[in-house]
Amino acid sequence: MTWTVPARIETERLVLRPYSPAADVDAYHARLVEDADHLRPWMPWAADEPKPVEEHLAWLEQCAAWAAEGGHAYLGIFDKDTGAFLGSGGFHATDDPSVREIGYWLGASAMGRGYASEATIALAAVGLLHAGATRVEIRVSPANVRSSAVARRCGFALEGIAAREGEEPMEVWVADLGTLTREPAASTPLPTLRDAGGDVIAWPVWDVPARIETERLTIRRFLPEDAPAVSSVIAANREHLVRYLAWAEDEPKSPEARSRKIAENIARHEAGVDFLMGLFDRTTGQYLGSAGLHPLEDGRGLEIGYWISAEHEGRGLVTEAVAALTRVGLLHAGAGVVEIYHRPDNERSAAIPRRLGFTDAGLSSDTVDGSEHRVWVADLGTLGIEPLITTAFPRLADATGAAVAWRVWDVPARIETERLVLRRYEHGDVPAMHAAILENIDHLLPFIPWATDEPLTLAGREAQVTEYARASEAGEQFRFAMLDKATGAFIGGAGLHTRVGPDALEVGYWITAAREGEGLVTEAVGALARAAFASGAARVEIWCDPENDRSNAVAERCGFSPLGQRTRGGETLAAWALEAPGTP
Image (cartoon, rainbow, N blue to C red; front, side, top):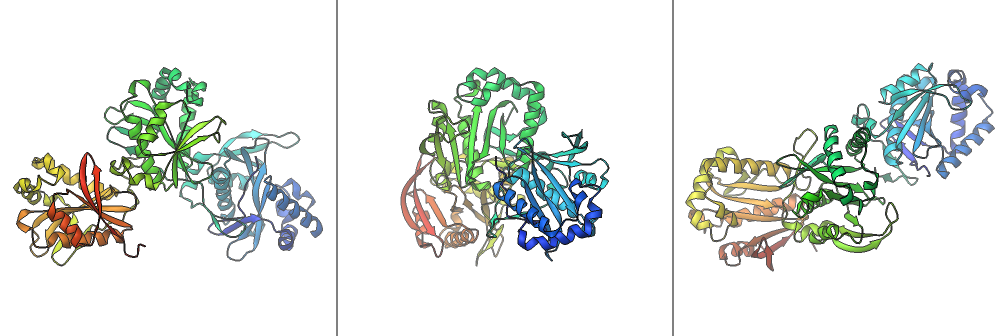
């Protein structure tokens, strides 16, 4: 394979780039003249230095040719502020096209300032994340204590001492994706990559949470201790799986191989390059199967893969998992598209994207093994139609279990109008909220679906407010207590809901019977619409019972336009929409 290295790699203090022979030869020649004695003990090629400037020019021209061909990538290391030439670094091709060797040298005046470590961490990231190497190596003379220290400081592991044919024995230091997830690389910002025109090149990494919870499932990054359960379930289902999944032909794996595979999955997830996760029963913790998000080769999106144990088929669990992963891929990770590939005769797999509103893109042989697969595609528009439009947001968490927020909306915690305060619920609201709802149940029941679950107990109300707080922090739903600004009295509730598509928010509201007819709901809806637009919504909607004359009148007074009747959750509702200011 060819080796693609960006035209420019920028770290905090350095620029690494392919040589421009005519422009760089004078600085390169001067550095070798000055530092030949410094380099000679460790660099075999320095034995003949300093060479004539003409030979240095020929060498830089050869380096530029190799870089253009995708072979060796010898790069100049330059001071980012001054442009001064400090030394050289880059990648050497090896016999294994998925492995590259990092080499580096610095002039004596640049030693002791951390430049070699800074360049090495950047090169490791470029090799493993940008160019797709499975590992990178540094080969160092055992006597070269300074270079060994650089490899050690950068998190490389000493694999041993080995000698290539005709060469002296060398220490072999190695790094893989796991190295990038540990210190110091983990806390080192990725370098900025630029193409030949100076445009920034995006890193091919994605942000997928370690844990995703749905109603019945926990979809999470594997742990080392999962290995026995994974092996057991795969072994029991091998004949079930091998019909449609090529990887199942290599099963069962030995315990050692399974442990290595899970360690690789963990490292790839932590590095942001691939996300194979386990499906676990949320209540019992039982391992049921696997699903994941895998980057498409063109970088525009993510592919969802999935399988489940035969005994758990037919329960809608895979559909539940795929719905969650679709939302995570499009909204949290920011994929342009999410795709599903399956063999044409796998009707169970086909039913899942069809059920979730994916578009059938036909058959394709552009697959890993070249076999024909059916392709299904979802984008943000898919989240705006049934069934995903009304599917609850899954809960996200990191590897420690700490909640991870959906990064879609920035809705304020408190909104004040002339007569109202709309703010997130607090546990101190529970007594007044509870009393108001119980007093108004008959008033609410005809038009408010959640009123059918009333009356809750006081403990149930406390739990409800706790869930409201969690959902707001997670960016899933935003519910507010409606308070009289003058007296602080609790008079109703309102909210902004994420169930009307990825670019819109829905306003919901209720008010006690005693405060109807004062224009307070109209005042609240106007404020919530402005807050929604300020947080990035392109549209605000209201869905209400067609027979609820008061709610329909509020929508009309606030400038909403009728969309006609829509069906949601088996109910027929009147839908209204208000476009963001400036929307054509």
